[in-house]
Structures are given as C-alpha cells and as structure tokens.
Amino acid sequence: MLSEKEKANFLTKFPILEKITDLQPVTWLNPNKRNIASANLSLQLQDMKEAEARWQRFIPFFRLAFAEMKNTDGIIESPLRSIAQMKHALENKFSKEIEGNLYLKCDHELPIAGSIKARGGFYEVLHHAENLLQEAGLLNSPADYEKLAKGEYRSFFQSYSIGVGSTGNLGLSIGILSAKLGFNVSVYMSQDAKRWKKDLLREKGAIVHEFDGDFSEAIAAGRKETKANPNGYFVDDENSKHLFLGYSTAAFRLKKQLEEQGTQVSEEHPLFLYLPCGVGGAPGGITFGMKQIFGDAVHCFFVEPTHSPAVLIGLLTGEKEKVSVQDFGIDNLTEADGLAVGRPSSFASSFSEQLISGIYTIEDRLLFQLLALLADAEQTFVEPSATAGLIGPLKIQQTNYMEKNNINPKNVTHIVWSTGGSLVPERERKAFYEKGKNGDRAKTTR
Image (cartoon, rainbow, N blue to C red; front, side, top):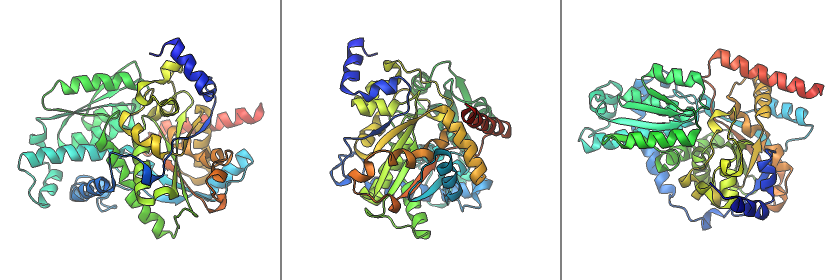
C-alpha cells in the first residue's frame, strides 16, 4: 500500500491522476512508446511462429473433440466484419464523424469458450499437455494428437491438476479444455465473476472456488493451493509467457483476413486497434503480435473501466505491477467482469509500456448503451466489457495523436476487438440489452 506521501507525489507528478482517481473518463497517450525496431522485448517473431506451429499440431484434436470445430476445420479463429451500420449509429449518437473504415474482430464468436481467452487460455493448456505427453514418450507422431480427442490419454492426465484465477472468461477457457482432456481443474473466481459462468464451469467438470474479494485475492489463493501439489500447474494471468504467446498468434490470422478483403496496411494506411483490457495479457499479446507482423503501421489502444484502470495507473506512474488501483482509493468495482482487475500483469506490462499508443477509460453506463446500440445496428450481441473499444475512433480523434504522427484520418482502418459474449444465457442477454436501452433513454430525458 502506498503511503499518503507517495500518493501525493504521484498526483503532483502526473496531474491526470486527479481525474483518474475522481473516476472521470480520460485518454492517455503513451509518451514512452518506441518504434518496434528499438523496443527491448524478451520475445520475438520466432516465438510466435513456434506457438503457431503448436496450434497447427493440435488441429486434429480440435476437429474430432468438439462438434462446433468441424465447420472451422479445427482452427480457433473469429471473423473480421465491417460494421458500417454501427459506425453510422455512433456518429448519430455522438454527433461526430468517424473518419476511416470501422471493423469488429469478433472474438465473442471464438468456438468452444466464446471469448478472446480461447486464444491464450487454450494455448497454455495445450503447451502444458504436450510437454507432459512428450516427457512420458506418448507423443511420437501426428496421429497421437488424434488420440487426445478419443480420450486415450484421460487416465494419464487425471494424475495432474491445473489451477487458474479468473474474473470469468479465462476460467471458462482453462476449465472447459482442461476438463475435456482429463485434468483435475480448479478455477478460483473473484466476486466479479458472473453466476452463469461458475455454473457452466461446474457443468463442464471443473471445481469452482468462490471468493468475496477481487481478482488479486482469487489468483493469490489459486497460485498457493495449486503449487502445493507436486503435479499441479498454475496458469498465472499476472505473469504468463504462454498465455501471452497464445494471444499473439491472432496477428497471423488477422493479416490473412485483411489481405482477403483487400485492406492495405502501411504507414500511410495504418491500422488502429482498440482492445479491452483487464490484467493486460490478452491486449498485450495481441499488440505484440500485431507489431511483429505490421511494425509501426499498427497503433494499439487499450480500454479500461473508470473503476479498474490498473494498466493505465501502472504505466502512467512507471510502477507497473507494484501499484494497484486500490492504492489510489479506487474501488475496482465494475460490471465489466472481465476487466475488473486492480493490479496489472508484470509480464505483459514490460511489453505494453513500449508498444501501445495509449489508453482511455470508459464508464459502465456507456458500456451497456453501446451493447444495445450494437445489437440494434448490427444484430450482434457481445458482453458489456466487449463494447469498450467501440468509441475508440472518436476518443483518439479528439486528441492530437493523428496530427503528431502525420496520419491522414481518412486512411485509417479501425478495428474494435470484441472479447466475449456468445455463451451468455438468453436471460442475461435481455437484461444487458434493457439496461443499455434504459440508460440511453434516461440520458436523453434529462
């Protein structure tokens, strides 16, 4: 916990902290961003290629083990869709033009887990499972990966346990896949996690441990209990290279999707990405991957709730994981459960501090309004936290970022990264939608 003197020093040094601690939405442009050529990173493109090769080895498993994967030929990927109607709806709502094209990267449609966490969470489980099987001499040919789908190694995995701390979606991805393989899997969930996510995990065979505190309490307990087991493996969202690499490989597939639709990417025709951010691993991994593929032609912005600006405070002060939102009197209470994190990832922050262009914060009220707007405009449903990037183009256009970087706004391709939503029960969907519609009506009648 920071002393009052330390807190006062930070507030004096970084005046924007006054607004952040008052829970006002802010936009922060990263003064420490480096060109990719000068960034000092502990991972490189070759690490991404090795991660992608692992995904490819497991395609036979996914194709056979999950019925929903037959249509994707065993590949975990989501569509990239133009959302021109949503663009018009946003322009009408905020009375401002969005220059450039607007797309939605639909990770809420990722198969099996229904969220972006299928990328990082699945990858780390696969990495661990493959290592165990190789050490036991049980993976000697491509055909052995099909045996995983047939349950031939379930008795082997039952001798091992996997644990993870989660606000919701990471727990779903780890729990569903680990249980499918045969691991004993425990998910340690914070108070922010939705009841339906806990119920679904139990239905899939995971053990769910519930905590009254936030993400930091859940992950600390999970780490301690899992590591007490000699055969236990903890998926550490605060410090995981494997989660990070799993997310990064999205860049390979996105590059192909952009090429297929004829979208040019260059410094004259840049990509702007808007990424909802919790602990920072998923948006950090995607940012790293995109920078490896597109270099400085891609500009990445994180989005956090006003009540949970963990990465913003960590990068702004330079203290990263050494400070929490609670140190500055912020409660870390948000209905955007996947983003309800008080302290940033140590591993991801070491990349993000050099690579991201900035961060803006958003109020919960607006998340629900954007959810309803997207549903009406595009007949697309996502979780509240997954709407956070939709106002990104408007937020950045209000700054001097384009001018400072010699960017013509009309040449920008804006991609909003959706993070979750397809598994949300119908009753919850209706409640989210009505909350958004009511909030919008309340705003217009004041």
